[in-house]
Picture 1 (tube, one colour):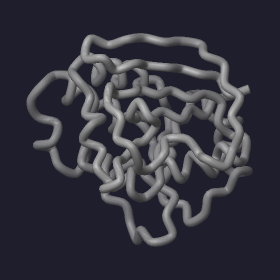
Picture 2 (cartoon, one colour; picture 1 turned 135 degrees about the vertical axis):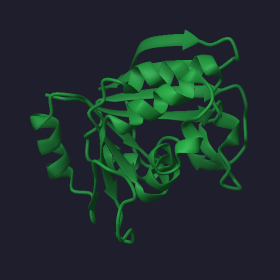
Picture 3 (tube, rainbow, N blue to C red; picture 1 turned 30 degrees about the horizontal axis):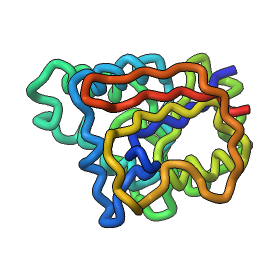
Picture 4 (cartoon, helix red, strand yellow; picture 1 turned 180 degrees about the vertical axis):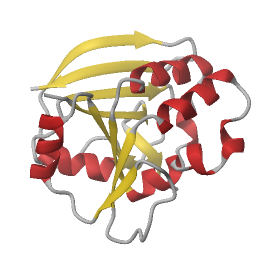
Amino acid sequence: MARLIYGTNASLDGYIEDQNGSFDFTEPSEEVHAFWNDFLRPIGTYLYGRRLYETMAVWETDPSFAEGRDVIREFAAVWLDADKVVYSRTLADTSTSRTRIEREFDPEAVRRMKGSSERDLSIGGAELAAEAFRSGLIDEVVMCLAPVAVGAGKPALPTDVRLDLELTEERRFDDGTVYLRYDVN
């Protein structure tokens, strides 16, 4: 059975966006970007909320976005290699290949995806991930914590669910970012 992995960048105080909706504080260094490339390469399907999907779609819709450094071009290739499921009640159509829209988050459908997939799945977007946490679907949490505290914003983890986690891996990057990997018990 495939695992559902919630992976995100966050501030040290646990926010994926600051109170103004900015996430520029999580822009990865080359070393952190290469880590995410390696981490995402085996993922077969990304489950996204609409806002995160629209942010990530540029990896396919704007070829100039992937120009420049090798690590950026490599990430674009990794992103294009996976299927995407976008959960949105408002999005009329997708702008990327290998992408489908689901109007509602259906925990049973995600369980079936996990059961039938040969590759792990990832889930992105704090609100969508919170629904998956509430449904007991997430098997693993992967976070890269940036060395900044923003004080307020959108929390990376749901505030209304208890999560018992077991630390399975950790790493410190040269820029002060810390990678943490947890199994959800």
